[in-house]
Length: 138
Image (cartoon, rainbow, N blue to C red):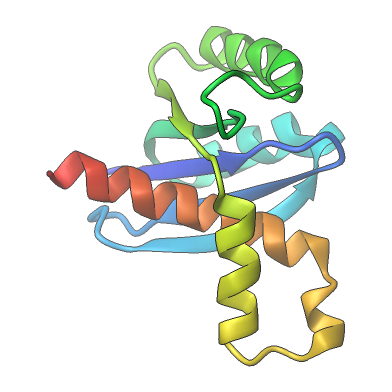
């Protein structure tokens, strides 16, 4: 089976998570500078089979699109054009940053380490992927 890749797209940094080959466990993979994201994806796809890419769909609390959607739409369109063989899906990412901060605090990580925004992005991508996998199983 191929993996599922999750992307928490940001203006500066992008968090990335991935499943194991059996698609049972979501793991934070890395955080990359957004300007290097397409290079990272191309490199990763040469090394690992990926059947689906789940991109965080940024919505406001009231369900309307957030401002970041104007960057995500062209990103997703380009992904679909470059990788037509891979299913690209948007998945609601509301509150993932809040959940990521809470997970970091509850894990006992030091105050200084909690200021690492790249860690928050990677954990947010993991939460998006975990939620996505849970809803698929229902």
